[in-house]
Length: 110
Image 1: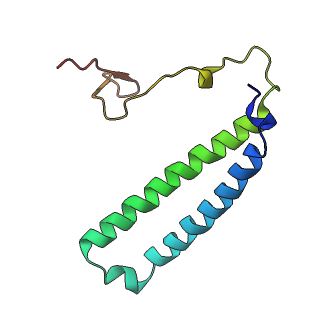
Image 2 (image 1 turned 60 degrees about the vertical axis):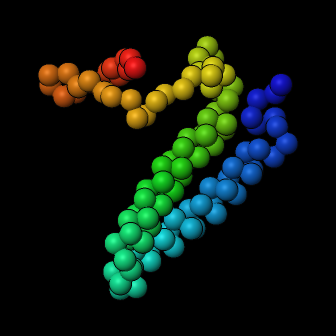
């Protein structure tokens, strides 16, 4: 199995997807600044705000994936973390140290 840059157009498809996502994200941001948005129900405004931030997060992830794909091979001895099947539970409880600077996941026991 080859790396991401060797796959047929994967990097190009990600770049196209990023541009399309950026366009939709920017249009949503512009809509949120209009009186039409203010006239929506609170549920619709809440959904649009959640959609905005989900798109923003996805945009950031996609940008990092593109950067990683472009940098493949440029860092010798780089750990191949992407090849592991690690799942990070973002809803897991977190323990913050006394100074608030460090967070450590708390094991969750049923």
